[in-house]
Image (cartoon, rainbow over all chains, first blue to last red):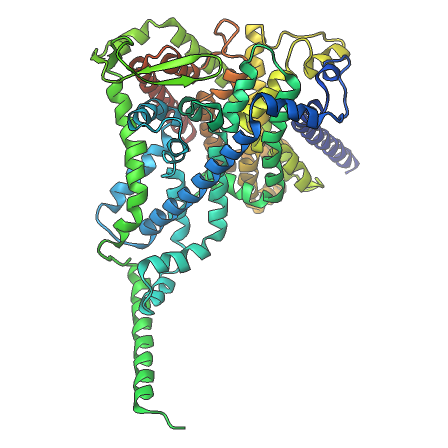
Length: 278
Length: 338
């Protein structure tokens, strides 16, 4: 018995050590980024490196903002991601509602065709979409970034799965009360889907927020750049301004981290929903 | 106050309707028939379906179509210019297409840089996916241990990198692993290992990419695996304990088989994700040194938007998608034995 207790203690110690080391590994790069963002370049490049934040954040930010209009990129990213998320939520929930709650011709066929595209890597679409947008004269527009993945296969799948659980009787009684089909969707189906919508919103928002290759190809002028595209310009420059890059990286990461800390539950359910567990 | 005939009539009507409703629900529960209202369903799906057709379904076929063509040189009026900061790109009108049949496919067979990119991606994949899944599984098991306290805090900290923007975190790693002034080399020098050429040596450059991708996605996979672990019925462990199973036995004979579908899912997801690697090598190594970290998607990007070989790049894309699909099918076959 004593032998077993000793073993358990060793096991506990190992587990704690492992978890703590991993927590450190995950947090150190983020901490280091913030420290670097708050130091003047000259101090940052000192050996040994400084381990505590300095006070030069706003100076570095000013320099960054003077070189590239980073705030505008933040604004662009927010506009694109928000409009995309709202539009996609609407499209996916409407279509998901139809697939869950109505009978119609070719229902299965249409649904499985849409699902089949889930396996296609989105990079497949960059070349044809670029040509399509070029022909329509939509390059360098937000519309070209927002529209293509608004019809999101993951979204329609999730919404259909969840909308199936709405009791038919509820919809039927609304129908008896003379509600139109759209009112039934808007007033009854949508409000019951609040948590699923939140999870899907996070999946969609993160997807758009992280999109890099496609906006890199579509957006031409710096005033239209999203955060990832703007950041990529910084590292390609002849002389690398570490302090400014770190300010930009902090500004790109911190809002999402705050969002993550506040909406953790939704993030986790979003990740799990995205994993299409059945 | 007396009830008028009208209100009585109304009451009767409501009663009748309630009865009818109950009948309808009962029938509905039996057959689960969904209403078939002409036009309504199509009205609901059409906005989605139109966008889907134009921007998802059509491009898939367009890629296939383009893969049989080649540009006849850049000449005639340029359609647009792209300014990428570092270089300019000119996109010619796409009327300059020449049908080359399987020419693009024949070309890629002898394109050594393409196969180099396949080899690089495979190398990264073969090391990164098992490493990350192993780490994620170990973390999930640790966080699932009953004695562990502060679970919420630990889980949050480990999953935090998921929320980091892909290019932002890549730039952070670019500087962390910088040879002269990176934090990692400072630490290594401090403990006497000496500095390592993280970005300029082919071997270490690949490992830097592997480290970056693993950092970003380990927590994400841990969350999925943790949910899988929590779904394993506790009785199975209790039964195993009664049979005298030790920690390893319980892991080997209860956890692994029970977790198999989730593990398989996570492996497939990560494999596809690593196959699609683009931003990390683009930002951290730029594909170098001497193309030893260039990935498939990065090479396709280069062919399409730097060399303006959109036809050839489309053929590469078709091959790339085929490889990814074959990999996924093999994994499903292997993992789905039981």
